[in-house]
Image 1 (spheres, rainbow, N blue to C red):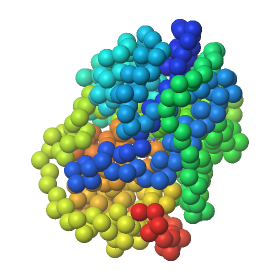
Image 2 (image 1 turned 180 degrees about the horizontal axis):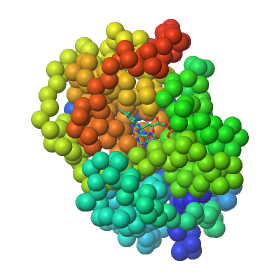
Image 3 (image 1 turned 180 degrees about the vertical axis):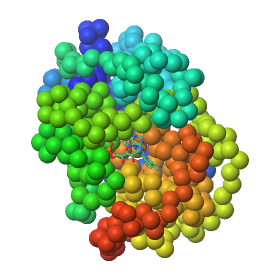
Image 4 (image 1 turned 60 degrees about the vertical axis):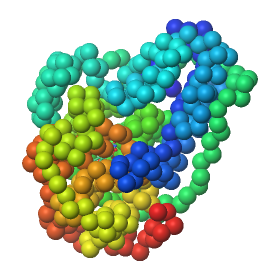
Length: 414
Ligand code: FAD
């Protein structure tokens, strides 16, 4: 509802608006994984987010149409377009190549306008054309930090009512599933919750003030912002997060940690643009570098990694957290990814695909670009092999994290 350009401009420019959300509940997967079932936590987070939107729209007298992209999507769109004489479609910006099939289909029926709403920086405001995006994050950051142009925050739209008289669409129900209480992410999806978390992390707990020191931890809920799931499904905009940090810096304090949260948001921007520049190459084994890499791909070892039964307790603990909650810390992601690629010698894309299935903050560009990076086929050609023992000594010296996840049973979930 807030800072949502497509919703805002639709209501500003047209008298009659039909809000439609297209819901996807299968992850893509690769090769032998085919089109895998989405993990239960990821699916639930998305469902909760859509229900929250539906709830907020109903309060404004508006029915939201929910379509599943697997269930007669084309027929449904055709029927809605016939019944309602739709002239224009305004949609959230789909990441370049990713949703072009869907947009191509919709554009058979109406003209389509897209609004960029998931990124902080607009492509036309960058100090370079996308095809000249620097290939290292540092060079990118230095260039954009010099002259960062951000769009104004967009208010809640002035709504006009819509009744779904034809009964188009599907009904969604969230499932209640327990998460172990030591999990670092226990929040439901939805804009209301996303705004609460923004307020909590920045203003209430002021955890932002120590972010740089705590961000590599595994423990508790406050070591990092936990904004990523809300950003990934559109409950929060990066612009809104950025504005809140700036306001906090002005009103309360500005330090290395407040800067570092913006620095991390710039990684997110960087990877969006990498995928814009390289498109489908982010999914290739040799990555955007087109590197000649090969892996042993022992499927028994891959299964152990996926089922959190490897020889390494820290890897297993992190994988258990992912499977039983849909979230894993950034440090954990780096460790398990490095272990899969560099210790087990398995194609990084199996790991990316498994994350795609489970992560509640799954974002196609963030996930695949981070995996490429660790595999050494992305924006840094040096393979990011971690010394796992060193990681343990540094981040879990008393094995507290590994021990607390040791007896957690994942059988009922996978
Ligand atoms: P914080 O530390 O509080 O960071 C604040 C915000 O900065 C995050 O919400 C995120 O938007 C951004 N950010 C932080 N680190 C990164 C990073 N390395 N790359 C890009 N943006 C970052 N993030 C996703 O949002 N979706 C994914 O699918 C995803 N897959 C990943 C896969 C691997 C192998 C790795 C190593 C990282 C991945 N990340 C992904 C990035 C990062 O791990 C998460 O964004 C972060 O852990 C989310 O928790 P947080 O919001 O508390 O992060």
